[in-house]
Length: 470
Image (cartoon, rainbow, N blue to C red; front, side, top):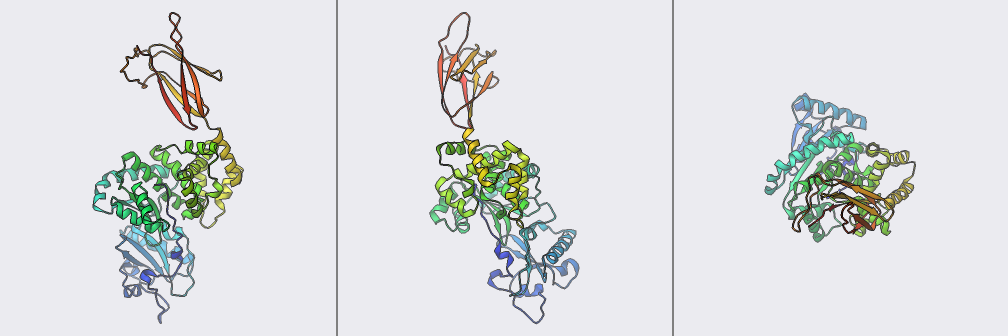
């Protein structure tokens, strides 16, 4: 799955409304953990347990239905108060042997009607500790996948952090699902624009999500109902984990334009888990046909959803190619710099960094991307699987000689052509049908020339084996 769910976290800026019950003003203006208990909330740890205090600064509430915890910090009036209190209680929990990575969200808590404390998503979600992903089987069928997913996600996390320079300072739960009906219901709940049939179709295709939830924090819904191969599973996990690293880098995923958010996840997925499709070829073909979407129209979630209906994978291939273009022209470090440039407190910083790297605004960069895609060629690799040297001649005058294969013999009709260890040449070719003349030079006997027609797609490498048969 390549789509990611966006939660704007506006609920986190409001006063407590868990179960629809706000904390009511009492005679004492200070809020205590007992008031949360009176509302029926399971307070499982407080500052009295940690420091012997009066239960006025820290209340840890369990959410069994989501298998997570919310840490409330009552009576904090400013972001600075909140951050100071959070660090103090993280330190106390760590010293007490508690796992702070099980806390999905940290939230300020004030009286009803009071001005909310303007903390950031990073304030609510981040922790000083590096948090390994917690993998959980959410239905009986998912339990058998734990042994496969856990080492995969650990390896992706290690290499992804090294590749991008972003550490996992934010809890993450990886939920494994094999029940397709349950996956479809979860997708429909997160994507209200999908009707039940559309959600069922997406579940059948293996759609997964990275979710930033007001109550759970960050989690991945990993759809295993289609029984993916290990290669497909690795790519699925890598794509979603990159979204997690993006959220850590920027605080919130909303700091990125959609073309970068999804394009970067596709690009890094390929680096971390290998190619699964050829988005560069798809983007180049769409560009040559004049049906490519523009980056300018792929900024907001609404724009992305609208154009995805029209272009399907074309929105992903355009975003991927934009990131690949940056890496090709300015180096992979430039893509990592863009990743780290997004900032929830400075929405314009990403665009400024893109301009600093490329020397262009988004419109100019989109035009340069179109030109780059238009110029992309393809290539064909030819292997000589015969005991005689061969020559390839192109209509543009280029010639390529392949030496004889010293370990090969003439093929019989039923023989299979081999490429491993054979002499080879890779030839860059323009898109379209390319005619190649194949010659077998020999000073004693003339083998008839033959012709090879290559249907070339841009940004694609084809393989051809040149054998002689008897």
